[in-house]
Amino acid sequence: MTERPDTTRAAHRKAGVSLRRKVTGYVATAVSLITTLVVAVLAIHIVFVAFEANTGNPIVDWFGDAARTLAWEFVDVFRPGDPKMDVAVNYGLAALVYLVAGRIAVALVRRAAP
Image (cartoon, rainbow, N blue to C red; front, side, top):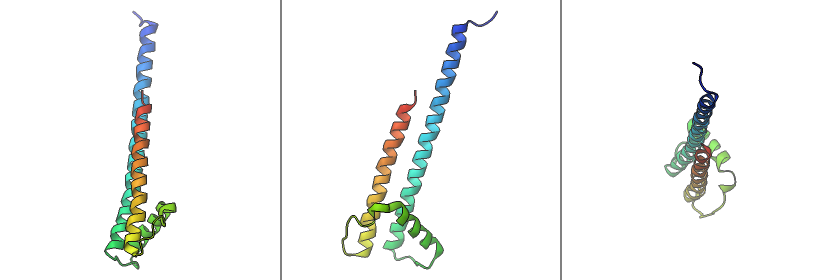
């Protein structure tokens, strides 16, 4: 006996919904991971500056360069006078914006799942 066409369509529709849920789940996870990595780079740079890490060290230098690139327009939003406070406030603001924007993006992606 053969399957009824309605049952086959329902099975295909269910498989399509399942695939879309998986894909949106992967996209949401990727967005969350990228956002977390960006925030971590900014936070590590703040820690390096706060504790006066050796700027001649290639790791410290890499995090500084990456953080300056990621903080783009937030680098000089506030000018508190103290260089450590300047980095903490401005790069911290950039990290907060990335964190909030990333969480909103993840929520929107997950909401798009059927």
